[in-house]
Image (cartoon, rainbow, N blue to C red):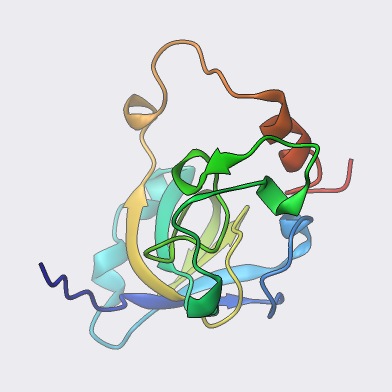
Length: 155
Protein backbone atom coordinates (compact mmCIF):
# COMPACT_ATOMS: atom_id res chain seq x y z
CA UNK A 1 0.00 0.00 0.00
CA UNK A 2 1.34 3.42 -0.93
CA UNK A 3 0.87 6.23 1.55
CA UNK A 4 1.30 9.76 0.30
CA UNK A 5 1.97 12.45 2.87
CA UNK A 6 2.75 16.12 2.49
CA UNK A 7 4.52 18.36 4.92
CA UNK A 8 2.29 20.86 6.70
CA UNK A 9 5.25 22.84 7.97
CA UNK A 10 8.88 22.90 8.98
CA UNK A 11 10.72 22.82 12.28
CA UNK A 12 13.00 25.82 12.86
CA UNK A 13 15.50 25.02 15.58
CA UNK A 14 18.87 26.06 16.88
CA UNK A 15 19.90 22.38 16.70
CA UNK A 16 21.04 21.22 13.27
CA UNK A 17 22.30 17.70 13.99
CA UNK A 18 20.28 14.80 15.49
CA UNK A 19 22.48 14.31 18.52
CA UNK A 20 21.26 12.86 21.80
CA UNK A 21 20.32 14.73 24.97
CA UNK A 22 19.77 18.28 26.25
CA UNK A 23 16.95 19.09 23.82
CA UNK A 24 15.45 21.75 26.12
CA UNK A 25 18.46 23.97 25.43
CA UNK A 26 17.16 24.67 21.92
CA UNK A 27 14.97 27.52 20.72
CA UNK A 28 12.32 26.10 18.42
CA UNK A 29 9.33 27.18 16.40
CA UNK A 30 7.11 25.44 13.89
CA UNK A 31 6.33 27.24 10.65
CA UNK A 32 3.38 26.28 8.47
CA UNK A 33 3.73 25.92 4.70
CA UNK A 34 2.13 28.43 2.31
CA UNK A 35 -0.78 26.01 1.84
CA UNK A 36 -2.04 26.89 5.34
CA UNK A 37 -3.23 30.22 6.69
CA UNK A 38 -3.22 31.53 10.25
CA UNK A 39 -6.82 30.29 10.49
CA UNK A 40 -5.57 26.71 10.63
CA UNK A 41 -4.14 27.55 14.08
CA UNK A 42 -7.25 29.26 15.49
CA UNK A 43 -8.02 27.82 18.92
CA UNK A 44 -4.65 26.09 19.35
CA UNK A 45 -3.54 28.77 21.81
CA UNK A 46 -6.29 27.54 24.18
CA UNK A 47 -4.15 24.42 24.75
CA UNK A 48 -0.95 24.22 26.78
CA UNK A 49 0.62 21.45 24.69
CA UNK A 50 0.54 19.92 21.23
CA UNK A 51 1.54 16.62 19.70
CA UNK A 52 3.87 16.89 16.75
CA UNK A 53 4.34 14.17 14.17
CA UNK A 54 7.42 14.74 12.05
CA UNK A 55 9.53 12.98 9.44
CA UNK A 56 13.14 12.36 10.50
CA UNK A 57 14.55 13.00 7.03
CA UNK A 58 18.15 13.33 8.24
CA UNK A 59 18.31 9.63 9.19
CA UNK A 60 20.54 7.72 6.81
CA UNK A 61 18.51 4.91 5.22
CA UNK A 62 21.50 2.59 5.72
CA UNK A 63 21.08 3.02 9.50
CA UNK A 64 17.41 1.96 9.63
CA UNK A 65 16.87 -0.79 12.21
CA UNK A 66 14.13 -3.40 11.85
CA UNK A 67 15.25 -5.90 14.45
CA UNK A 68 16.59 -5.78 18.01
CA UNK A 69 19.52 -3.71 19.24
CA UNK A 70 20.97 -2.34 22.44
CA UNK A 71 19.66 1.24 22.93
CA UNK A 72 22.46 3.73 22.17
CA UNK A 73 24.66 0.67 21.57
CA UNK A 74 25.13 0.24 25.30
CA UNK A 75 25.75 -3.43 25.96
CA UNK A 76 24.80 -2.94 29.63
CA UNK A 77 21.24 -2.25 28.46
CA UNK A 78 19.11 -5.13 27.15
CA UNK A 79 18.70 -6.15 23.54
CA UNK A 80 15.26 -4.81 22.58
CA UNK A 81 13.29 -4.59 19.36
CA UNK A 82 13.04 -1.31 17.47
CA UNK A 83 9.36 -1.02 18.48
CA UNK A 84 10.32 -1.22 22.18
CA UNK A 85 12.47 1.91 21.97
CA UNK A 86 12.28 5.43 20.61
CA UNK A 87 15.50 5.55 18.57
CA UNK A 88 15.67 7.74 15.48
CA UNK A 89 16.69 4.94 13.08
CA UNK A 90 13.12 3.68 12.76
CA UNK A 91 11.60 1.90 9.75
CA UNK A 92 9.36 4.81 8.71
CA UNK A 93 11.49 7.59 10.23
CA UNK A 94 8.52 9.05 12.12
CA UNK A 95 8.93 11.11 15.25
CA UNK A 96 6.24 11.94 17.78
CA UNK A 97 6.70 14.41 20.62
CA UNK A 98 4.45 16.30 23.03
CA UNK A 99 5.60 19.95 23.13
CA UNK A 100 4.67 22.90 25.32
CA UNK A 101 3.16 25.79 23.38
CA UNK A 102 4.95 29.00 24.32
CA UNK A 103 3.20 31.38 21.92
CA UNK A 104 1.67 31.58 18.47
CA UNK A 105 2.52 34.41 16.10
CA UNK A 106 0.88 34.29 12.69
CA UNK A 107 1.79 30.95 11.15
CA UNK A 108 4.55 30.25 13.69
CA UNK A 109 4.13 28.15 16.83
CA UNK A 110 6.92 28.63 19.38
CA UNK A 111 7.40 25.48 21.47
CA UNK A 112 9.64 23.88 24.04
CA UNK A 113 10.38 20.21 24.51
CA UNK A 114 10.85 19.22 20.88
CA UNK A 115 13.48 16.69 19.82
CA UNK A 116 13.57 17.48 16.10
CA UNK A 117 16.33 19.29 14.26
CA UNK A 118 16.16 22.36 12.07
CA UNK A 119 14.38 21.94 8.71
CA UNK A 120 12.59 18.74 9.79
CA UNK A 121 9.32 18.30 7.86
CA UNK A 122 6.18 18.40 10.00
CA UNK A 123 3.51 15.85 9.06
CA UNK A 124 0.80 16.82 11.54
CA UNK A 125 0.05 19.01 14.55
CA UNK A 126 -2.58 17.99 17.08
CA UNK A 127 -3.66 19.64 20.32
CA UNK A 128 -2.75 17.55 23.32
CA UNK A 129 -5.79 16.54 25.37
CA UNK A 130 -5.33 14.78 28.69
CA UNK A 131 -8.01 12.28 27.66
CA UNK A 132 -5.59 10.96 25.01
CA UNK A 133 -2.84 10.57 27.59
CA UNK A 134 -2.13 7.38 29.47
CA UNK A 135 -4.90 5.83 31.53
CA UNK A 136 -3.76 3.86 34.52
CA UNK A 137 -0.31 3.19 35.86
CA UNK A 138 2.67 3.83 33.58
CA UNK A 139 5.36 1.13 33.56
CA UNK A 140 8.75 1.27 31.87
CA UNK A 141 12.07 -0.53 32.31
CA UNK A 142 14.91 1.04 34.30
CA UNK A 143 17.18 1.34 31.23
CA UNK A 144 14.63 3.73 29.66
CA UNK A 145 14.67 5.93 32.76
CA UNK A 146 18.48 5.97 32.60
CA UNK A 147 18.46 6.81 28.90
CA UNK A 148 16.02 9.69 29.43
CA UNK A 149 17.89 11.14 32.43
CA UNK A 150 19.58 13.93 30.42
CA UNK A 151 17.41 13.77 27.31
CA UNK A 152 15.63 17.07 27.94
CA UNK A 153 17.97 18.88 30.32
CA UNK A 154 21.19 18.23 32.14
CA UNK A 155 20.49 16.68 35.52
